[in-house]
Image 1: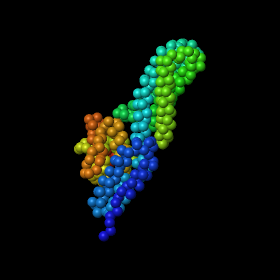
Image 2 (image 1 turned 90 degrees about the vertical axis):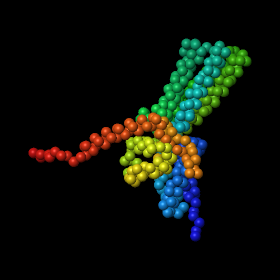
Image 3 (image 1 turned 30 degrees about the vertical axis):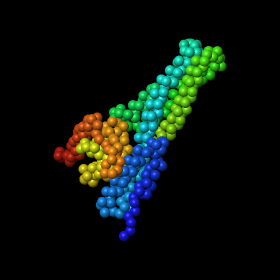
Image 4 (image 1 turned 120 degrees about the vertical axis):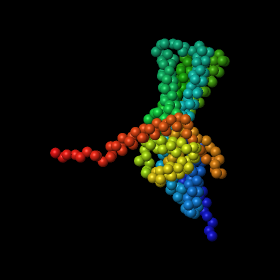
Length: 231
Length: 113
């Protein structure tokens, strides 16, 4: 009597095909693959109890689950929503911290944050406010389109990655402007930031802005790629 | 009955399957087949993303648990899911009653003149 073939290779081959079509980091696929694997093994068990051999049961389970592309398509929107939600939550959580660092730096260095002139910082601050406003608005839209409100909103899978990408653009703009304003201050009035405390605060704020800018920049690329994958 | 035919009603159908109690992914599909007398035959793999979407909307909740020696993601209805199912059910009954009435062979003889 020949030994029954284990279903695992067929199942794993199917899962590899699905994985290859999923967007986002591999970590985001772990739960999905574990759940699909259990389902495929359940299906194979069901077919075995109907009299098929292990190999036939695995083939039948895979056939029953459908085209890997169709399964991946279904998960693509879910992964995009999950990733978009993470991005906007990070941006919303870090925004006030970075903003506060800049405000404290400006106060400690007696920077002219209230100057209403149309030159230098006076011109940059309204742009910072605009970028922050865009970030917050888009991030809130991202939260709405990835959570419980989706039960009342029309299904539009591309909305979440779009909102996260716009929020990321806004954050890149706000942080880049903050850094540019600091550079202008250092170039035009270096004495304002010569005190040790002001210098430390400026360095901390600049480091935080650079880190956030890099995160937001990468997030924009990732979200736009996922948006494109949603057709 | 394929996915295209069920479009727009899949969420309600999945919620209805969970009305009787928590189910894992494959059990949902088996229940769908049994309850529809084999007429609903979706690719099983497409049920999983639909369940994730319902979970994100807060209509079901999912937890990993060990059932039958395997770790499974078990879904159950939330109270919002029960309300959504009630709404879905009543709108389907209204819709099907209206369409049935319209599709009935007409009782009125049409006079060609």
